[in-house]
Image 1 (cartoon, rainbow, N blue to C red):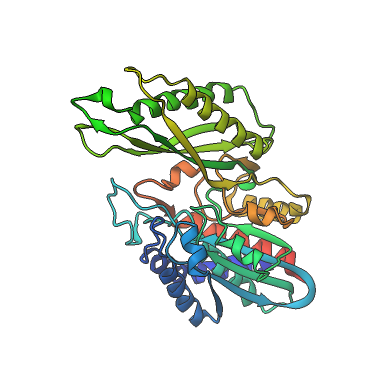
Image 2 (tube, rainbow, N blue to C red):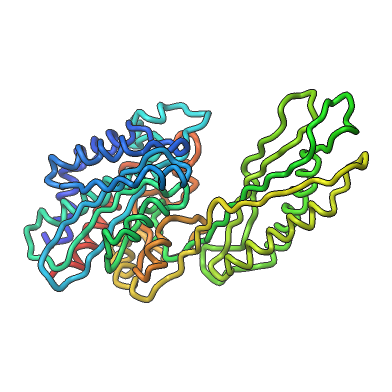
Length: 415
């Protein structure tokens, strides 16, 4: 039995333990919003301790957490140091998740296993990779071989709101400076690039009045509708812009949240829109934001209240800027190893492509740390029901991804 087969066998022998570990992680909610994530970090650290993994707890100051729109964050680092002279590889997964929403046929916090699949929020993105990375490192160390370099587990809690008080905070505080990194995945693919994301909050101010005397007010909702039409019209232009990165198509704009009004019989005086603009790697975020603001301002200026009167007023606030992830040349050892071992373990070619999603991996790449996205998931993100009802992970995929990561770590760290 060669070393890679020994790793595979160790993961197989300890897989029931890995599944139990994941189930416990799923059972502690980390809905963001509201973003009370410190309890999950404490539970994770407690579960890691019996494995011999000492998790450093790095609590982000309350003021910074609240400024980011969350309630509490404690980021974790587990350091496994080997001999000098090798690379330090960070394995990052995020514990924060979107709320479960409606339509579940299984308890979103139950970790229920049915027909070889575990159901629950974050089973696929990305508490599954807390377990993938933890057990891959344990498998690696079970060989008892001399290794060079180090592995760090980074378990963080701000991916949904952009990552600045998650991995971004750890990096800014100088608490870690890895040479390479692998971030939590969501499909069989090795992801080497991803879209950026700009989110804006647009507040339209009119003048509230009684619905019986509408001429005495200015309808902010009608003004917002005029702006919405101008924004959605941009998507036709975006279809003409094509990325050169395989797996990424074109930019897109979505309005995901609209709030406003006070009652049915009141002309709305204020309406707020939250928009999400996905940026392909070739785009300049500053130019994208400037263009969007210009479109909004021009639409607001051209809106004419149907009964005359004053015009609407608009405030625009940036709530998120996540830059695109671009491939760095130094990621090739990881890409090569993951593709090779993924092909052997899964029995099919594993592509290295881009994804239209955005992640906090970019925060490492922006600082010159070559990284890739790889972890447990199905062939496509859609199959996992990520961010939808009945999110699930196929346990066979979880096992195989763990074996692939363990093999990759061995290739990079073996002396």
